[in-house]
Amino acid sequence: MHNSVKIFSGTSSQYLAEKIAEQYGTPLGKCITQKFSDGEFQPLFQESIRGATVFLVQSTFSPADNILELLLMIDAARRASAYKVVAVIPYYGYARQDRKDKPRVAIGAKLVANMITAAGADRVITMDLHAAQIQGYFDIPVDHLESSAIFIPYIENLKLENLTFAAPDVGSANRIREISSYFNTDMVICDKHRKRANEISSMVVIGDVEGKDIVLIDDICDTGGTLAKSAGLLKEKGARSVRALCTHPVLSGNAYANIENSVLEELVVCDTIPIKPGLSSKIKVLSVAEIFGVALRNAFENKSITSLFMHSQMRNK
Figure 1 (cartoon, helix red, strand yellow):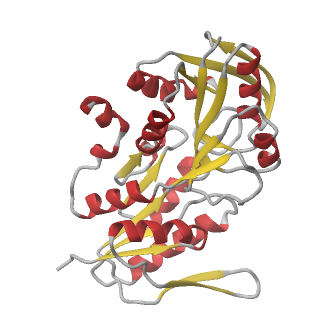
Figure 2 (cartoon, rainbow, N blue to C red):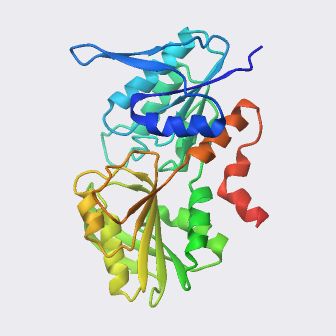
Figure 3 (cartoon, rainbow, N blue to C red):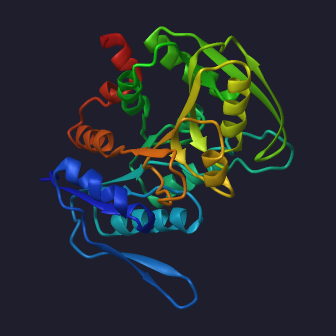
């Protein structure tokens, strides 16, 4: 009978996989990654997975070795006669390359999807894709979890008097519209213009923020420049307080200094990517382990995962 579950972790996500396995109620499987002197590596499962449903937890943030390790783990699980192989990717890297926005560039998000499918994954479970349409890049089922299930209770506990949500750019408007609709509050948009990646040349605020407690929401915090500039502009326009909630803390370059030196009250992130502790007193981490633990169980038991989505919460409120 195909009724056993095995949860394994790639090198970069072991801290999170341990918590997910604990939430699920099973020990984290034994797996090592052997490394050769030239930098080549080889994942190795240290226990039988024949006939098991195997969940492989690995976020695909930089370096690219994390993607390759996930692909090798999928291939190894398939060759070890796993019944099903599920790629659990809390942070899906290369998601910002979701279209040809300029001539002669790759669509990296689609290429990564092709590789995961070709490696032999039967299913993907991920969270807050940079663009929801990336789900369509896969020819296998994709369960797209939303961090709203984690952020909504946190925001409710803040009990802000004049709550207003802000999108740090036009691309985040739909995400903000859904959550502001849940709270029945106003929303504003910070419209930015870039000259090049990670460099903002200008920004304007669309909407009234005078005397408001602003919550900026985004899926990725990379250098922190957009959030810092947005927060400063919102304060200049009369906002009483500004805080930010971002799912994936990429936090590259001068991100920690940008956040620490900004007017943000706090930056709340999820643990889809590990952060460097002690570099900013303003960063708070919420865990996605519980929601992923439930998602894995529902996937294994062929139950609905829709109940984990924010839309379901909105209908049931």
